[in-house]
Length: 311
Image (tube, rainbow, N blue to C red):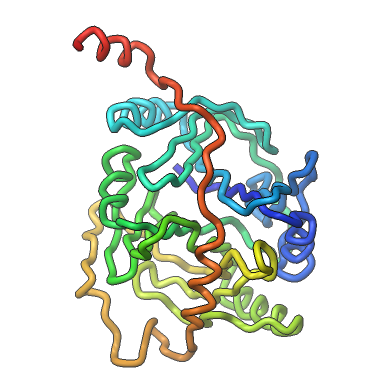
């Protein structure tokens, strides 16, 4: 199982795409109708899709997996009673699978047979997405839900987040203890720390400073720099992150508790060298909510029929 892409809807999608390619550092992949697809240097056909819309919301977050894993998902999602539907992707790379709605409306798409593309050169291009984080009303409950229904694993818990993995990367997603349900941020994996630092410098050249960073997190130990993207509602969001070097963890990795992740007074990361724009980040994190545009359908008809007979 691997995180592949995120699909957003927002006003002025073309302007957002221009910022992400001309300044942030992505490469254009294609434009299909009113959707702009942007890629990194790796083998995924795109990392972010930007669909023109009067409203801003998260359409889906996409993972790719094997056919065997997809069949496991169908059964565990059906057993958990989560809304879901079969889907065929019309995005670059194609593929087919399911879309699942979690308890707080987060929409996760799981695809098989999705094609990849040849990598491209670019020292400052992101390689891939490293994680997508969501705000939650009840992050603890969502962490348990994705373990039970999706087979993900909780890697660590802090005062602020529940970190979740779907492979050996410490986290591919996380759920922030925020009291709302929305997109917290999207993190792009850079080739190394120099690429992160060059990215910070490139944005400074255009009058933008990090909302938090550079720094190094505790859980996952990844280097980071967060920016509030200058697009979306009110020209302030979503939050996007340069990141690199997240830890790889074994299957028997023991999940940490909040008391395991504490810092000296005045610090909020390992390095303790950067301030954090709490208010600005919070405002940006509230802007992209979740919206389902499909009706739930049975993933395993035989199981549904058996359930009806038992009643």
